[in-house]
Length: 353
Image (cartoon, rainbow, N blue to C red; front, side, top):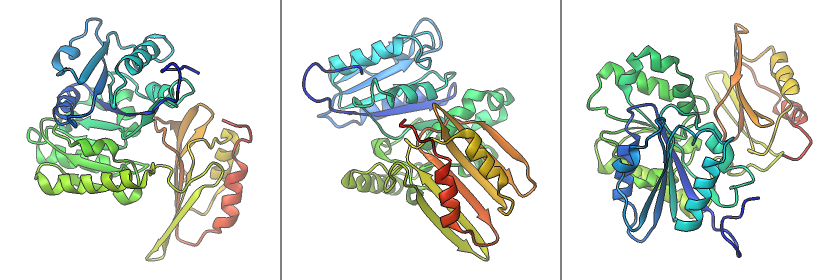
């Protein structure tokens, strides 16, 4: 295991990944956060550009209490090489920041960063908080962006989606972006709108939970900011990561609901829980009664999404989600949750992950 500080316990640094496709406004948003950070705190920013000669570092505002470190060449999102590990370890060791912001290139897959930060090298030194993705609604008119796998991965991975530059887009573009955001599975902690990258620091500690999923608009100002601040304050006071609050390894959380004769059942598994891919897919495929099954599943080092409707159209693909495993079933009749829960548990791998 990599030791960041020589001697004594390591204090985990609150860390946020801020993503977004090319031109979404990531650098502007980070500058806004830096300008409004607590005066007594020391922050660090690790930024990556796709080009070989860095420019973004010159666009960020540094100072005595702000350290900017840049890795050119798109290598931040490729954790197989040493550059990311070396740069991150040096930043944590030399700066000892109170918070770390990471800005991957707009063309980079951020999942590798998450896997590194939560892996054995840095898990004791990094406290991964909200992952934020900025979206320019105007990009939805560009088929090249919509077809780009990174664009979809950034959205899927994020806890919070921020629709930026809403003053520059049309009503139709904004409506489409909001519909896209609201239909994500798992649901986002929040979907917000803003201009010029103006997002509050309270977002950095807002984590994904059903009770926080709401469409908050930042454009009106104070009222929206107070909603975000209140939720973040509750999370800070409880000291819980709401992604896995009440969930222990091997002991999933079950939630259910009923409306007009339709039933919904949702299982949330701890991030350490790992499924046997053949067993869990066979179980979900064998369920003939549900009208809809959606799932995000950890299978070893990989994560997959599962989507099947009444028509038996089944889609399984690699997923960028990294927070926890979730299974959602919608049906027009009650489900024996105890029996199904036991079958789900039997699909978990027995070895320690």
